[in-house]
Amino acid sequence: CEKQLDETVVSCKKAQENMKQRHENEMHTLEKQISDLKNEIAELQGQAEVLKEAHHEAICRHEEEKKQLQVKLEEEKAHLQETLRLEHELELKARLAQAQASFEREREALQSSAWTEEKVRGLTQELERFHQEQLTSLGERHTLEKEELRKELLEKH
Image (cartoon, rainbow, N blue to C red; front, side, top):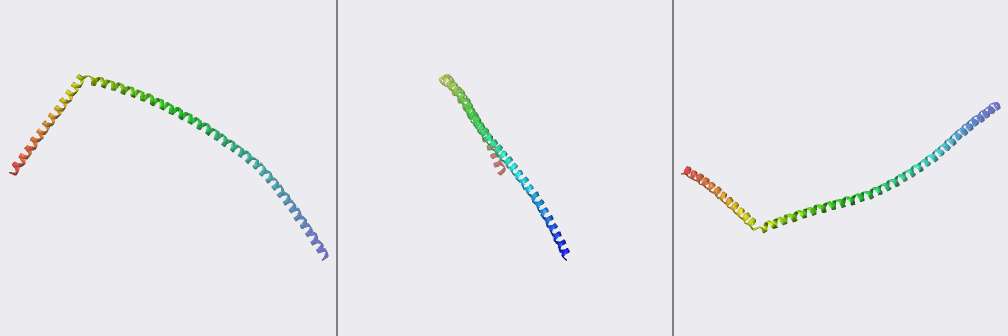
């Protein structure tokens, strides 16, 4: 019994030693994994900082480019507005000169009484011709209607 007890105690001690050794090995492995993970976290945090800085620089460059483009756009807009204003002014001056020339021609024409009389005579003749055409047209229509009425009366009679 004592021998068996001694063997059991030795066996338990060996098992305990084995478990202790496995536990120490697992602890050592876990500590190494923790250390590796801490190193990886530190490395990733460093990369994150680098990326944040790069992102910040990119945003700053973007904002600067945006401001420069806005200034350029405003300059271009002002230039185009000035160009349009000058073109419009030239066009208005040309139209004014044309209107003045036309006015001068009309004034000279109106001052010429012969032209005025001729114009009045032409208009009068045109009105008389138009009036005569309407009278002729009405006469023809009257004759046709009269003929149709006469036929209707003859048919009814």
